[in-house]
Amino acid sequence: MNARHGLKRILAGCLLAGAAACAGAQTGSNSAGSDRTGSDATVSAPAADKQAREIARGDPVRWYREDATEAQRMRTRQKEIGAALNEAKNACRQGPAAERRACLKAAQDTWQKEMAQVRQEAPVQSGS
Image 1 (tube, rainbow, N blue to C red):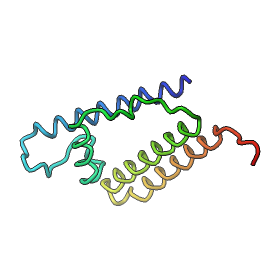
Image 2: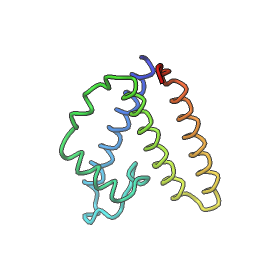
Image 3: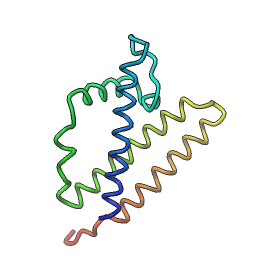
Image 4: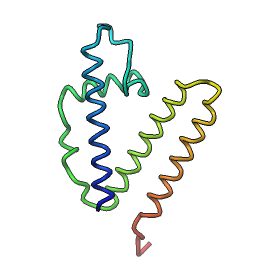
């Protein structure tokens, strides 16, 4: 349970950092919004726009609903790991070309390691 609460704290910190970045971007001098800075620099433009719209609407109710089953918790972790992979890939693509291949490989390796850990922690299903 401590790991789950730690993960929630990490996610809350990331969400706060993202909200702060969006607020800073909205108060910036570029009124067109084409100059993305802060943590949004690693997110694609359509995703950043969607995030900004979601933040403007406030916190979704689903953020405050606990996952009731182990399967739901596992699925949430898999989605979070996949989202982290996508952000890492975007960051790699924006880095120097000479380092891109190694960066993408490291991101993929991290994804594989984390997904294997999730599968290893999955409860054993009986009766199948």
